Amino acid sequence: MGKGEFLFLLQGLKWTVVLAIVSFLCGTATGLAIALLRTSGYPAVERTTAGYIALFQGTPLLMQLFVVYYALALYGLKIDAWIAVAIGFTLHASAYLGEIWRGSIEAVPRGQVEAAKALSLNYFWRTKDVVLPQAFRISLPATIGFLVQLIKGTSLAAFVGFTELTRAGTMVSNQIFKPLLVFGIVGLMYFALCWPLSFFGSRLESKFAAATR
Image 1 (cartoon, helix red, strand yellow):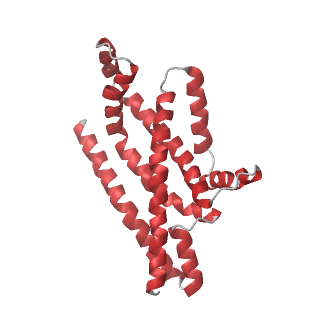
Image 2: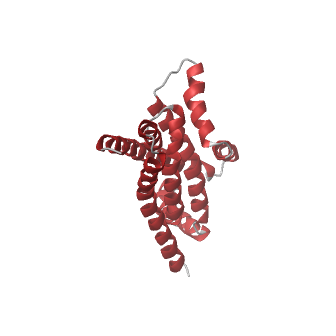
Image 3: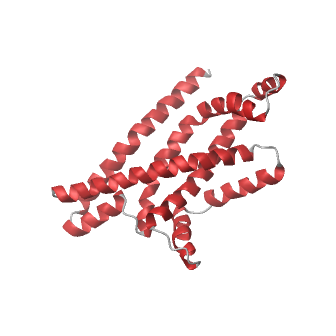
């Protein structure tokens, strides 16, 4: 494999990272809103957001990408593959992060919330200063674990024509007819992205577990 093919793989790696970051950040904002709605105490709102989460957790990610990319085109909304996969992964991430953070918010000791109420803190300041800082700490290992899964999941974007790392590897492999070499390199690139995050998440989980003993 020559320099040109390797640079093309690096270009695909760049778009994998960009897609993961954009999806994670947008999913973070939406997921936080979903988590807060899921714990709002309003049954109708909680049921609606629970249905949203169930929809995206109960259907394959690839199908969700197909729906965003192809179904919207049926209604005259022809969008670029980059925008389609960014929307699809954001919706996917928001559902999973919303559920992770919902569990973390509910894991905050009830006494903390009652103490905040006793100090006459309203819902906004109680959530901002008491609940969310503790929930963030609780959720951090699981959130990092989901980010690793999201990075690996970006490979599915190749099925709707977006050229990320996996699709770049397929194109190079078809050109030079060395699939083992090409996808060995692609695998190492994914490993270089995911292993440090997995290791960091495991260390945090061990650290937090030791702190609660």
